[in-house]
Amino acid sequence: MTTIGPLLLTQIAKKVPNKDKIWEYVKSKYILPPESGEWVYETLDQSWRGFKCRLKKIHYYAYDSYEERLEHPPERVPEAHFKILLAYWETNAAKKTSLQNSENRKEQDNMHTVGPVSFVMRYDKMLRENGKAPSKREMFEETRRRKEGKFYDRPYDDTQKKIQAMRELKALQDDQNSESHKDSFDEVMGNAPGSK
Image (cartoon, rainbow, N blue to C red; front, side, top):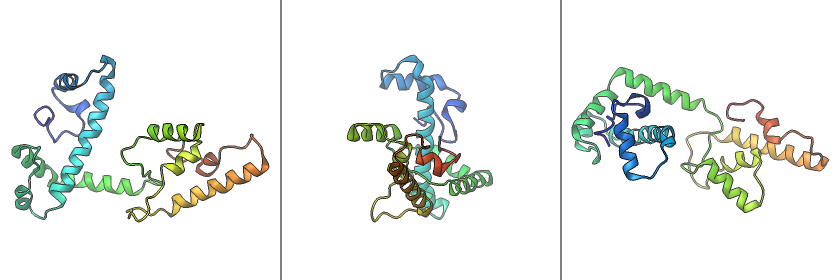
C-alpha cells in the first residue's frame, strides 16, 4: 500500500495524487457499491493515521537514535520510505504538530474505553440484551466502563462523578414516577461537547 499512498501523507482522501488507484485496489478486494467511495476514503484515512501512529510508537519512540531505529525497521514498509518518514518525524514542524496533538488529547474529558468496538455495535448488543433501546445515560456508562486491574493514563474521577450523578438523578426521577423529566444524561452533561 505504501506504493499507492506515501507514508508522509496525512490524509489519503484529500492529498494522495493517484486516488483512483486506491479506489480500484479496494474494489479488487471487496464488493462495494459506487456510492461507498466517500466512506471508503474516510475509513482509509483513519486506518492510515492509525498505522502510522503504531509505526511511530514501535519504531521511533522505542529507540533513542536514528541508527537504532534503522536497525529495527518495520517489515511492511520499504526501507527508503521508512528513512523518509524518520527524517520527517525529526523535523521541528512534525515535533510541533505531535506536541500540539498530545496537548489537545489531554484536554478531552470523559474518554470512552470501548477501543475498536463501535458505539453502534455496543448499542445493538444492549438492545438485544435488554429488549429496549439504551438511554444516553446507559450508553455513556457502558462506553466509559473501566476494566478491573487495567491502568489508564487518564484520571477517571470526573467520569465516575458524572455517572454517579446520572444514577442518582435517574433514581430520584423514578421515585417521582414522572415521564416529563429531562434525561439524566442531559441534566448532568448539559451542552458538553459530544453530549448530543
